[in-house]
Image 1: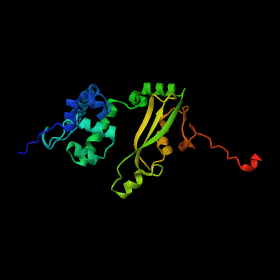
Image 2 (image 1 turned 180 degrees about the horizontal axis):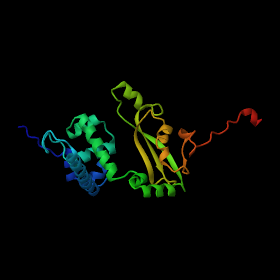
Image 3 (image 1 turned 180 degrees about the vertical axis):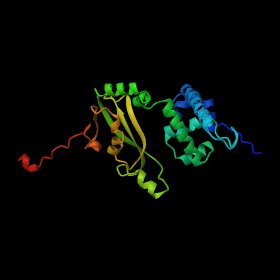
Length: 245
């Protein structure tokens, strides 16, 4: 019978020996990392118990090939991607797993992160209908700021995928994200992540428009021209030289 032995990643070993370097490596300090591993691991185990209970099993629980990476290393892998944005191929090499495994691990844990650490005000209240309506009502008293930004990714191998992710503005393949913040620019109200680079900013906006209070006002750049809820810059009238004579 083949025995699988989980081995601590070199990065995790380095962090254990040099905890003061955790912030530079992962974007959060050592104590925050330990807290995240503890809470995210507990949430993952809770979800797994619920899923296992509802499964119709062919083999008994605990059977099958165990994962190569411990939970702590899977979480660290996810943080490395978020902080440094390497390719999944490079991430797999670094942690001793395949490219597809690195991709799977990241997307599994990012969902847990979003549930454990809501990325925006609306994510925090979306499960409570009474709070949701109250927050939307309060927000309508402010003019919120909406904007999008892009992060480069490795060019997909499939041609159709290349077209979806190619950003004409950036002249490279990207993921596009949209963020809505308070007027002071500090508090995140809503965020959309991971849209394809070819997706127009205004299309991302309109996919979420119905969730807002109809009285809500926004301020945005020229990418949102034509959207009635968003106040955008007005194009200056060009003055000809003949009008100056």
